[in-house]
Image 1 (tube, rainbow, N blue to C red):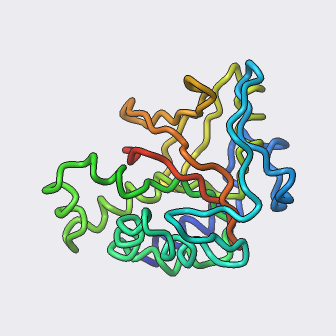
Image 2 (cartoon, rainbow, N blue to C red):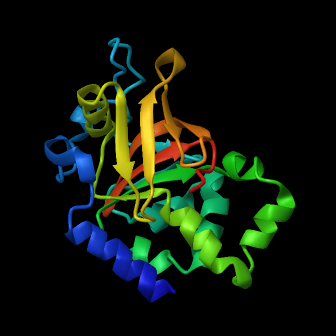
Amino acid sequence: MTTKIRTLMLAAVSGGALMALGACNNSEPAAPAESAAMAPPDGAAMAPASADPMVGGAAMSPNDTIVANASKASNLSTLVTAVQAAGLVETLQGPGPFTVFAPDNAAFEKIPAATRDSLMQPAMKDDLTKILTYHVVAGRLTAADIAAQAQANGGTATLTTVQGEPLKIAAGPNGTWVITDAKGGTSTITQADVAQSNGMVHVIDTVLMP
């Protein structure tokens, strides 16, 4: 299963599967000073991303991979465990680039404990992989990239995930940005533009469901 998912993800990368992002997606990492947070259409803006972001009390190095950085963040430990259970560590340590919408521990705690425990079992690996790859988009998307697409498309950015189904991102209340999943559930981006050597991470507060 790992090989199949890795093949799918790398094919998506090589094919430029960012769908409607087109010219809005800058494949080069933004310089820290330019890594502005998403600006809603009314001009209000989230706080700019730090040049040396801290996630879960740990400094995130732009020279480390998505998995290496997540492993240092205390609030992403459940996500790291899930990635290991799904056999996606090797993929997310690869060259990518990938954009990951990373649910924090509190996001996973919104899922009933019995369901969480079940998803971590070997028999549920396919289901877990489907959920995790639904949080991954091929390419390196900064908050500014996503905001630009939203502004160009009536206020909503539509991103195709590696899993295959879309995510919709639009401005929410109080300068936030909200992701709507395939089941109509919503998640808020709580920390944007955490640069990685092989992509970009945006921390979110709810697990997305395909």
